[in-house]
Image 1 (cartoon, rainbow, N blue to C red):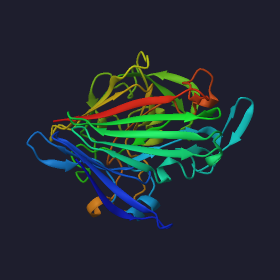
Image 2: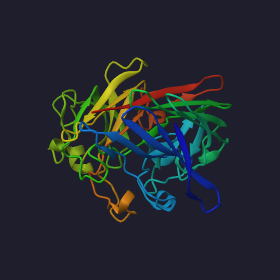
Image 3: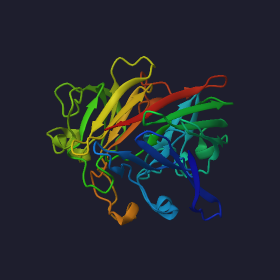
Length: 351
């Protein structure tokens, strides 16, 4: 079942709609045509109680003014681009430096998170929303006209699948992701220190103080970033590691073990009290894990007036390596005419 409701208006007068997907599973979700934002994900716990496990807002104005990319669809290129520039086929492209005036973050000043998407509703046992957007040549100074399709599917077993597709008429770069902030106890329940995390990832990118890769990879063995055996997220906060101290929590790109392009289970988050579990299946080569260390406390309150607070959620952004186009040997995010960008992530919920 799909329910469409008016959510609000943009300053230009454009209507923003919320689409709620529901079926017989333990999960339902609402998605906006603005920014492809996932606004709510409701999941039953082990006793049958339902909670919204995704941070977000009650009104469109908050999404327009707040930081953090809450629930947003990110593109053309997720994560950071050092110096806001890259060279492709001998041409240097200078992008908007929307990250501390030095780097480009999540697609630039007006990335895919700030666009109205066309929406096709496909109802059924596994209801779908098919979002499409044409990013013109030169948008945010990225080359090529990019035809983008993102399909959200609520699966019959309680997962939310996100399928990204794109083609271009000129060589460009693409690295899309979804920026959901998950708290499996419910977004209003407090910090996520008690959540446990397992990752099928054996390396992380080494980062400078501005979260830009320095070109090297770090083996997680013997570091606080080794989640190959499940452990409590909060147990690593404040650990004796330079990056953990610098960032005040986790904000790192984890590289999937034995990556081969197939969809595999790469991350599992569990909240022990409610029993809710989130399993992330993806064919992406990496997972950016972020624990809300840089939440802006003066931003608008979350749904229901819940104040924002650090470590209120965990993000699991499936992607290629950040700043890939500026480092030899990193993941390839170049898309050429005649090729297709095609990647899928499933956020599967259980209790």
